[in-house]
Every structure is written in C-alpha cells, then in structure tokens.
Length: 371
Image 1 (tube, rainbow, N blue to C red):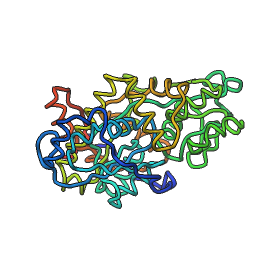
Image 2 (cartoon, helix red, strand yellow):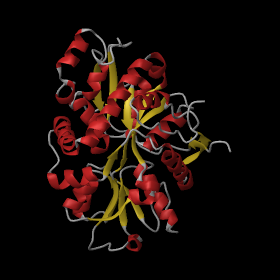
Image 3 (cartoon, rainbow, N blue to C red):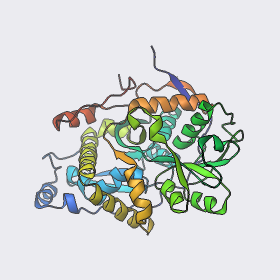
C-alpha cells in the first residue's frame, strides 16, 4: 500500500525566539587524548580523513531529552570524529525556530522532536530536511495534582497543560483523549478536558498557582512538577510497543547532506559513540549533561529533578521510524495535519553504514526512506 499522506493544514506551533546562545566547543574528557591532538594537527578526523568543510553548525535544546548533543559536545566525543572541523553549536527553545534556522542555513544538523521534523518536511514539499538518526526515546509523563485527580477518569473537566499547540506532547495527549471517547476541539483546547498550551518554562509556576491541574510534558518539566507535589499518573512509554517512541531524532539539511556527506557521517559516528558512552556510564553521563545545562542556562538541575528525569529517558541510535509515522497519523486524526506523503523523510544509509562497521544492528525507516 502507498505511504499515508500528510500535509500541514495550518500553523500548529508559534515561532519561538531565535537561538538563545551559541556555546564554545571545548574538547575534554572522552575526546582530549594525545591521539585526538595529533589528528587535529594533521587536519583530519579520527578515521584519518580530511573533511570537506572547516565548520559544522549543530542545533539542539538545553534539555535532557537532547543529552546526546549535550554530552557529545561537553565530552568532546563529537569533536573527536570531526578532527579540525569545528562544531558551532546553537541552542533553541522550540522546534519551529530550529527548523527556521535549518532552512536559513544558520544550522546544518539539528537534534529535534518528531512533530517539527514532520512539519518542516511537509511545509517544504519534502525538500528541506532528512532524518538521519535517532537520539532519545521516552521521557514524557502525565503528572497531576493528587488532591484533584486520583484516576485517569478524573481528568474529565480538568485543566491539563501541554507545551505548545501541535507539538509532540500536545498531539499525544489529544490522541489519548480521543481514545478515551472524550471530545476536545484541537485548535482551542476546549472540551471534555481543557488543554492549556503552556511553555514548559512557566508550567511549574502555573501548577503552583493552581491555574492548571496537571500537565502532559517532557522531562525535566514532569519531574519539576513532581518535586512540587504532583504525582505521575501515566508514563507515555506504556502506550507504545516495547515502551519505546521517538522523542528526539537527528535531522540534516538536504543541501548540507549532499555537499558534505563525510561531515554528516562524522557527526553520526560521534552521536553513536556518545550514546554508547552514555549507556555504559549513566552516572557520569548524567553529571555531564547537567554540567552542560549549567553552562547553557546558568544553573543545574537539583537531584530530586535530575535523577527521576534521567531514568525515564532511553538513548538510542534507532530513530524509531514506525512511531514517527504513528504520531503523524495521530496529528491527522486530531485535525492538525492533512494527509501527504512522508516518503523520503528518512535517509538512514549513513547511519546504517556506521552501525554495520561497529558490529551493531542496522535500523529501519518504516518504508519512509529515500528511494
């Protein structure tokens, strides 16, 4: 059967601020040995090859679900694969602004969620980006005020926050409401449950003031609410096969992929090596991610937020393409997308080449890869 067709019906997310800041790359820890220094002096990457550009611009969020980027840059793991090719990082608060930066050439590669990836691909007629790898799964929870909401059925009539109209968590919550048999107008958020679109940065204050009764949000916002007395009522991972769904994947501009495939492969090798290091050294990786957050935001997460948030996120090279396809269908069902063809949104050939060389299993594109 042909691939389902999804086209953006209307703008589903307001443009956010431009990149908050760019951070200077520091090679330390993993990537700061003599071998790496020799590679840089020779103007080559760690595999002994000179790369085709002097810089690569990478975008990501200052968020634990983007820890592959946080840790990979903080520990110099990505830099090791790039040799003298310099990483120029930029951070973003929302997917639409990162997609805008990719389209403008302000970044070349980005760590980003599934919904903005889908929207960026469809709005460009399939010409702006490719998803080239996975980064993280999970890390999304429904948390509620236990005095007001004791069971899932108690959500009816309550005010529940999501981060943004049409974002990944908003679509997931709207779909969950629909499967309960309840009615909500997707655009206004009004219905059997009041869906209140609230920026993650202000959601804890909204909860503290009582203006919302709970939230369907990513980490670490969920754990911040729990630290204020909220209760986890549902972990979204329990709704998915094998408890896995994409929360962060890696995209690249098609122009950059065509012109600099060697650099794309180097960044992907760095990503794969970072995920391997994170999974082998969870406590060190957690501390590294928190240190990166402190550099970017000026403060680190307290242990009562960091520890439960970190435990709920899985770091994976697999983009979990079938779950992105399902999320797109959920957006259509909610009335936020029209049908269009997502074929070509993935190009996993570079990643699978790297995985095969490392003796790791290759990953699938759910029939949505480049033909």
